[in-house]
Amino acid sequence: MNQMTWLAPGSGLFAPVRVGPYLLANRVVMSAMTRRRADEADAPHALQAEYYAQRAAAGLMVTEGAQVSPQGKGYPGTPGIHSAAQIAGWRLTTEAVHRRGARIFLQLWHVGRVSHPLLQPDGALPVAPSALAAPGMAETPEGDKPFPVPHELDAAEIRNVIAQFVRAAENARLAGFDGVELHGGNGFLIDQFLRESSNRRTDAYGGSQTHRLRFLLELTDAVAAVWRPERVGVRVSPINPWGGMADSDPAGLFGKLAEALSLRDIAYLHVAETRTRRPMFNWARLRRRFRGIYIANGGFDRYRAEVALRSGRADLISFGRAFIANPDLVQRLRLGAKLQPADPAVYYGGGARGYTDYPSLTVAECEGLPRFDWRRAVMAELRRW
Ligand SMILES: Cc1cc2nc3c(=O)[nH]c(=O)nc-3n(C[C@H](O)[C@H](O)[C@H](O)COP(=O)(O)O)c2cc1C
Image 1: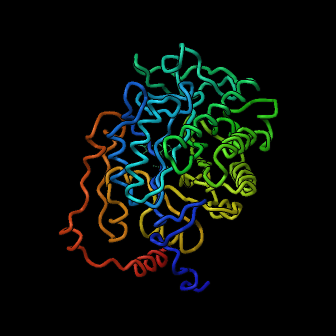
Image 2: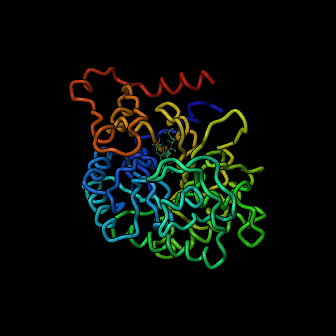
Image 3: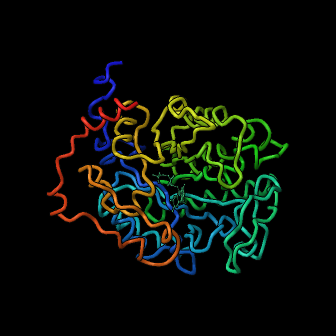
């Protein structure tokens, strides 16, 4: 293929794009990142508003996961979206971000078995599709404890969890969000239903791929009914093994999901494209099975983002860690400036340090940068392939 045709003009990182009802200023997305700085009532406050506003040059932002109910919580300090105080706290963030012109979706989160009675209401067991413990330790107020064998949800309890998501979506709307993203990745409840290693059910929610997809599809339909499909995004991480996740046929499972979601006209499919030598996963093929907006995530830089966008491999690119340490990431990408590294020691918990105190480039620093020729950079990247 001719490389000049291949690199379609007008579709790069800084071209506007329509997602659902919104015309976004660019194709840079801030990926969901848990930072665990909510208050004692699991409510976000002025500090979160400042953090998100600092990064609001992104066309679209996705918040950190917000638990849909007390049962959905698995870590200290994560914010919820099930109380009046939490709705009021999130409103500070949506207003601050909207003042800067970005759109912001709330990520709806239920951790499932990745929790502990010490983090659950009334000391209850965490819930899951099957009574199988996750590997690893829960971080509880009494120190690290092994994840327990969870309570297996029955059909009525599954309906109750779906109702929790529906109420959370209604609350997100009250808080001023532009939409919601269902957190279907990283070994949490939805992922636990999707994948074989955590779902051994023999009813309509387990067994075949079609059955294991049922929970997420019912959830998508239920949330879309309160909010409209065009304001609902879905996130998955098909080969992320975290939390004991495994599946014998991720390409088949997530391909089927992409096709089922194509029929629903959702806002987007957001895929954490974990890169491993084995198992190999053909991300381009997954993208082709989804007829809608596809957001690619995972270790992108400017060059790789331009290649993915201009080849049609993705419609938008989301950045995670790069946004932590670079509040002005969009500007840095535009200028081809160096990125500051993030400090993992301050990812979770604490206050402003490692959260809102990363500096942006000064005007003088921007002016001192050589002009960034992204065309040459992308061609150089392609020649290396
Ligand atoms: C500190 C931290 C917290 C994260 N929390 C979430 C989360 O709440 N929800 C989610 O879907 N992904 C979460 N992720 C994954 C990121 O959204 C993203 O997929 C990952 O960092 C890979 O993208 P990157 O290479 O651009 O950083 C988190 C990642 C980090 C580093």
